[in-house]
Picture 1: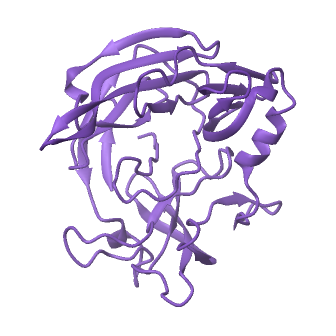
Picture 2 (picture 1 turned 90 degrees about the vertical axis):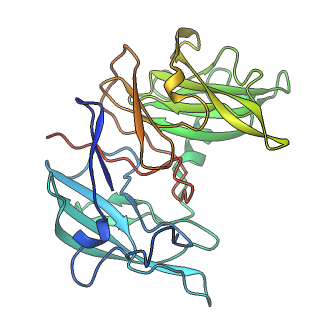
Length: 301
């Protein structure tokens, strides 16, 4: 776990979550530097957009097993509650065993009794959102749509437009029942980095390009950031050479900072000149061994 102070725009500490997860450890410790688990060990408990939990608490979905079971591809998971800011373990709730060979660690939600429970794998909130959007204005253009992220009433999707048969990106507004295509995306970017800002009113596009390396090519960031509004129009463009090449955007804070990492424990912060609604941003990506999409937890001091 890396601790970032967004007011100072700096990394202020690091610790192993396993060491703070009780005895025996509820989060499997890594046996040595550079050792990677075969599937996700710990990530924030996402509750399908609910802002759940008591003040000063953080919920983590975690496993005490480093490797999945070879016989059935499953791994046990628990819901851990930590008191902030010291990351002191308060409670542990067993969630059961889950197929991580052909699936992903569980998502959770609060049931009617205000107790966390795992969401059945077949209950796909993103798929439900797309089915709903097909009834909106221009919803019939959403061919082969893939939801990338959602926040508040907005769903970010990439899709093949049925009217033009080209690749496109749109923001679906579930409150207004509208589909707004984003101007110029994906354009000539071979693999655009797209991050929905908290609240869903803005979209950040980190521009990438292919660059020569060792006789081949690799995808690299240009340092250019384009910000689009909910009308699909370009709001502003920023360029910061500090986050070019091997830097990856991992989150946008409600206070208006884009946070980048180089996957080596270093961080850089780019002020965007905008503030966003403090709403959670969720997506389908739950397991990222490469570290470009680490789990993010915001905690006020």
